[in-house]
Length: 347
Length: 270
Image (tube, rainbow over all chains, first blue to last red; front, side, top):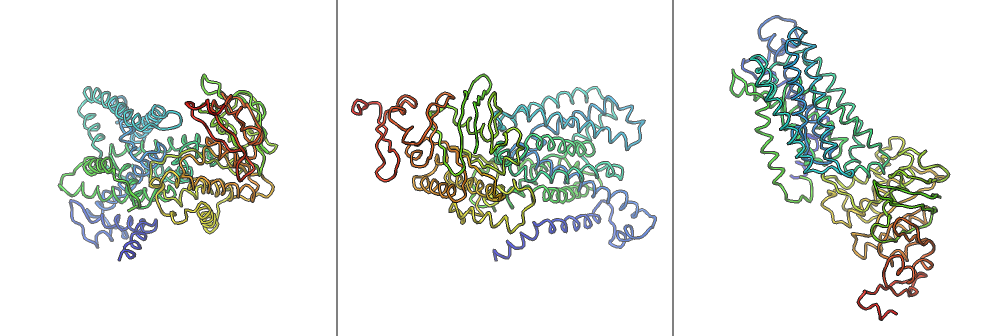
């Protein structure tokens, strides 16, 4: 019986298996929402050119939203895996080490200072602008935390987490000050960002986020072996002929770019970067060749499912997705902290 | 041959190595001994290209070390570090396979698995293939890391290129049986594959049995250099390492045997 279960587990967790699950989830979730749509209507909307309310709902609201949830889930999850590899620590993730706060702060700065400008500009450009600022904030904080927490070639975990707390507090203070002076519209925008939501999903956002997250993730998969070697230590990686400095710079840049675009578009959706890679490592070990791709797929599946819950659980109203992921993620994080029982074998 | 010419290394304010010259020959075992802080590890790091030199030059089979790129260097030498701390559940076979990262082209799955199986059998850990690295004992971890080094040295076979292995206190966390097994293993490889070995040892008797040449280091300077019999004399042990010892011929092997004497009974030794 165990052999059969193992076999099924292997199949499900293989990359083709995950792709099939992702596609199934994407199609199935089209049916769920505040407004009931029949199977035939969904197929009609996708395959026939027809006008109508359900048609519009599927093509312009549900489909882009599911795609965006998938992209953001993949982006956040891959970034988490990358940050854990870079810091050589399974507890690191963009929220805990303050990168999210840094990106958020810069996004708020751009909203407050360029609010009037953003209104005039076309949606495409203004969203890109906020995302660009979030990227710069993310880049700056990743770099800062990395420099602060690294001593003699080793990342000091305590310092890393404390630096994350300090940076988050600092960012929160400045954000608070801006929230205090912001007007009603800005306040709404900022609140939206801090809770995280995919409710504004549209094809414009997909056009910005899609290429960056997909190309970014594909570029990151090239560093799989380097990250494996860095797990043993930077010196060990160098002994294996890896140019650690260049690898780290590329990873920090690409990861910040992905985090920035995710936060710029959907606000703070926490803990995905922590939960998904951790879960996959428990099941399959820490081989980045598998971990990067599987994190992207499972992250996408997770956020599509979570977002479906968020938009249906208190329908017709919506729960901000950031609240939901934190509700799942925070206890999970505590569980990791408490779980000090040494493991002889992987699950 | 690795030729080290008058190298000095500084770390921050401290001058760690001062004008050191030595050679490491393929097929020979060079062991460095010295007290803590003598500069042994820094010397090892410098030879493997991890430290920048303040002055001097390291020439690696007629190529200057600073003209060699990291990958090229990694194909010529493997380093067995003193300890490696991994915070993640890394599976033993995944870790050992990392040795193949130094290959120029992507190796076939079959080739990688052959290298992996050979290396794990060499260190007698084949049964541990699917275990998680950080659940193993210190000695087992050391042998896994050695297997990784073997894969690294075996994965690109260049007939005309010399290969070297650097060992930083390889026997430190091993039990006595494993210490000898590891040393026998390395000796065998050295002779069979003509690999050059540079090793740091604290156990002088292991060093005496293992080494072709011994380097005695003190405060960043090379004090003595020669065969175990020439270097490991009670005079040298006293002046350089500050220990009192009786040095006798080994009952079985052609090397000295050292019996250290605690300070409290040093009068007896006289």
